[in-house]
Image 1 (cartoon, rainbow over the protein chains, first blue to last red):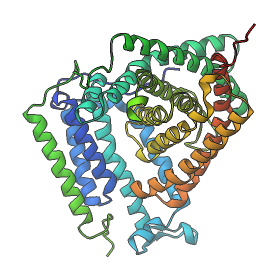
Image 2: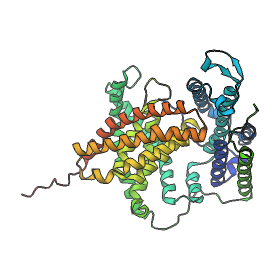
Image 3: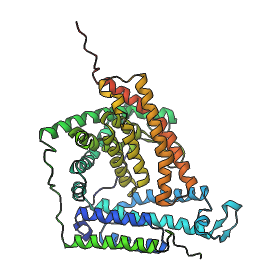
Image 4: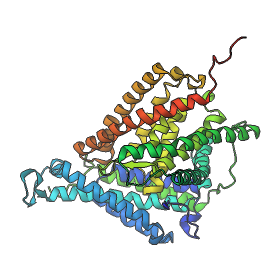
Length: 276
Length: 184
């Protein structure tokens, strides 16, 4: 049951050197630009930029290959589903219809549909490198500090950091419980029928959840004893102070967001239409 | 409301709850045979946490747990669906006062209240909110996302209805009943 997860990759690179708060702000702006815009030109520019930033971060494709495989499979499925459910969505959006291949009237392959699905896929390709980079270049405990820095209540930021802290522990506990149940002859594999599987899985879920509730009790008592939450503010061990490069990055991110929104919406529509 | 409900216990419940949510949605999801649709035990857990620790804990466990799950499995976050987890956690948590699980009583009337509320909240969340946000943010075809939402919604309502109810009743058994003392 060795399932890989994305985690921090330590490198010396300009991207790693930025403060976590900067990366968080830049990432939020970047994904809002990609989410709001459907303008192919904007998306293409952002995509090329994200590849470039990925390159200077010195993270190797191999290190995140398993996630990329997941995402590509998802995108393929998603595109097929879109085509099955709404093969004329592109025609509806762009207002023209250039039929490429005739199949059955509704499922005729049009240039507009291809362009529309290309745009959807491109949107994901713009967000994914940025999100991946943010995850692998920001240390989890620095992430909590940066959440607090951009204005999130420190108690909430602390619970995010607790979540990061306990994911490996709970994963280990999950494995121990799963193995001991399997040793008792409970089959968790896909050989069982769905409802039998649900029943078998609940023999893991119940002890896992009840023991986590106990853990909550223990941890909160320990924090209470140490006087957590007494003061209005809190300092963070892993917080990086802002430097010149942080300000520059934030300014560039804001400019990119404003520019891409201006270009996208200047004609009143979020779609770029090459068909008129 | 914020001041009182952000006790240390709530903060820890949010943190560890989000971690358990991540592990459950990562490892304990049973495929149904329909692509991209799993029986998610994590939502039964979310319902339990919302009822035990209240709406703010429920909402934030949904938000943080779902965001982290998306981030570490896919490398990107589907905000439209994350928002629904927040919504479901928060509004399921609103019944926590009525059910009062800490009293150790989880009988027929509490089971009915819980299931009516979770079904309504999840119906609004998965059938309406998720597809609506998908269309708004990602401009995906409406018929596709409404079908996805409906399928996910049905499975989640059933899962929470069965596993969530069982979880709550076994949690209630670990509490001392408020009327357990007998005068001799």
